[in-house]
Length: 216
Image (tube, rainbow, N blue to C red):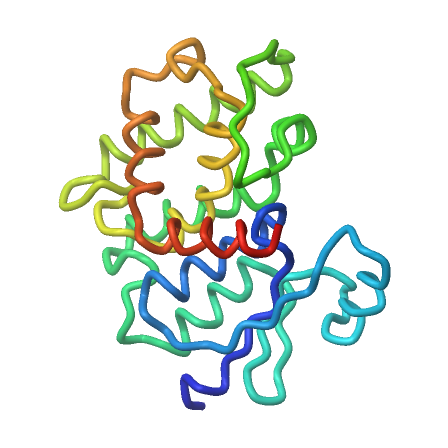
């Protein structure tokens, strides 16, 4: 298939953390796609999403006659379809761990997600953090520190250069910033704070923020 056949259906950039993941991966690797926006939290949202998505959720990727409705599955499909793009690390060991941490993000951290939903445009004063949320954040800090220490040479991201794993964790970085989380109190030695700054230093994250402001 040609690159022009990709269409990515996403929700509001302020709220839709799952939409950010494949959008950022496609943008960061300079893979052209058509973007279709479905307004969330609005009258008619369910009906509009249902026009595109068999799961009733966004994001989803349309690739010719194929519809892929899960963020991680979208990234995996595009990585296979675009073998010239280093979406996953080339090294087998790095790639395995990158997939493991991405899958952990994909399937876990429910307390953090519930207590700190993504609100990309706002920064709130720090508040008390429940123990279940703190446990999630401590695990994330540990993951980031381990990946950076073992695999981070050659760049500012988890596996050195930007990869799909970083796209998976970008909404987490947004949450930590929006809710003014004290990372040092969560066991950070500075690695997690620097990583958050690296993600927000991406021009694609700036583009996402500008679009989110226009949607608001």
